Image 1 (spheres, helix red, strand yellow):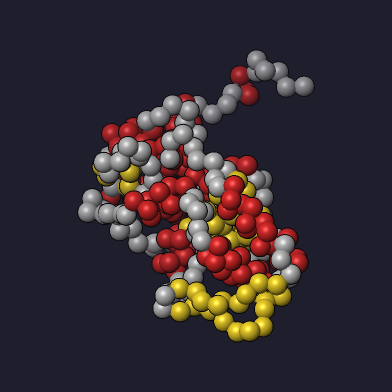
Image 2: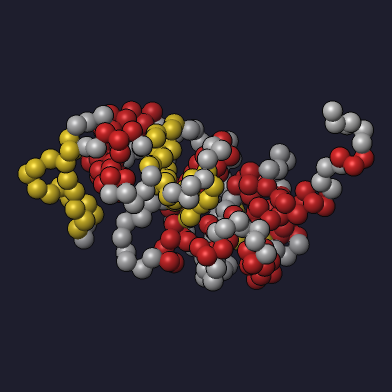
Length: 265
């Protein structure tokens, strides 16, 4: 029986806890490029808002004012923050993601701009990815679009993110924050089924706050046949007269989760 008064059982010091939070925030920013103040707090396990401000005061982050009601600003790393993040990677603090993260360019300067539509998709994606990683014991790694884009120059359609399970198998991760046309959702399911059936991915996970999107995706999964699609300059278009036969095992490997928007993105 452990004696709770045994000083030998002392937990991590306040300094160690702070270092863990700082490490988590910097590595998250290195993977994604930028994040909202709320996401920095979530990643750091901070109940009170303001951890990004502390890192900014230390000269590790800078802020980009946006002028939106929420969020009003983003955080990215300064040169000092980037150097510290790269040192953490070299020291093995990023787990076995070293190869995926090594020499990854970081181009987020104060001249960086982002469209509102892309920004809010990205912020929900970051929230959803972190939510999945926190609640699922099997998630053992993460590749963001930024990481995959830098390592893959083939201009192929890539997932919003890729999660790695404890067998290092990749899983497609998609976040659908806003209502999409039915054909666009059909294309997404078709591409996921094709990739899973071909053995490129072990499965797929979709997060959405919309009941209509969840229901439509679940319905598409249950179909025996779907249309086939092919890439074109304007996107994906239906091709061929023969329908695509849905592989039941691949369909069962697609998970759809309805998770609402947080109070603070």
